[in-house]
Image (cartoon, rainbow, N blue to C red; front, side, top):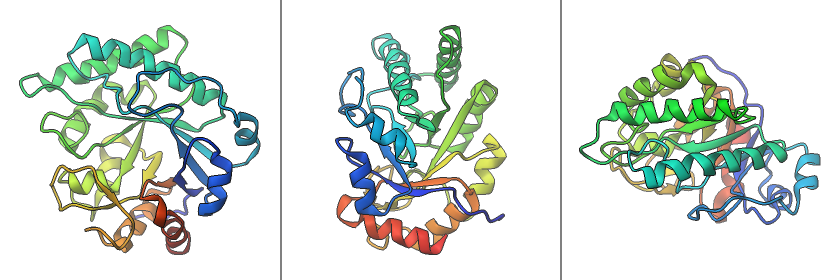
Length: 260
């Protein structure tokens, strides 16, 4: 696999003072939520917006977990589109490099092609309103038997629809492993589908391969070899964010900075 040094390595940090928390973890990049990730809430202006913009950090915003633009349920899909647009606008105001959003899922009996089409419409509706204003990085997910971006055959269906519309991709190592995708050649396989990896979520997995469990672990405490995670980061050549438990985040960032 080709080797490139990531632009910045950092961590998902608490949103109340991201710059201070970046210092505690030795981060060059930060990822944060702008609201409670389980809430349907539009973000306001961040109280530390000036400090964040002036920090020199590579900033990423993670959209709320509630968002599911793929679903056939109108009562979830339509508010999801609106909420994604609101968080993207706030991310632009912070100078973020991208906004990360999960691929979403459908009910067991739904046609996956409908979910893919709903994603296409999400980008089309946004374009009609002037666009998102920054890259929307779709993230692979760990669970769900009818998920849009768990298995890479589904990811290929999705990219056929949105790859030409400005979508970016965030590769999560825990999600891939727990979702049943082998890690050995994953960078090449992802690039073969999407042509790009814009961000890596470098996480160990608490649970076994193909468990479907989205449970992150600090490096060396889970079921993925830490060296394999570093290899993926090196090959991807993109910014890297660890989303591991807070007590070991600083060590995880330090390991990657010395290994990638």
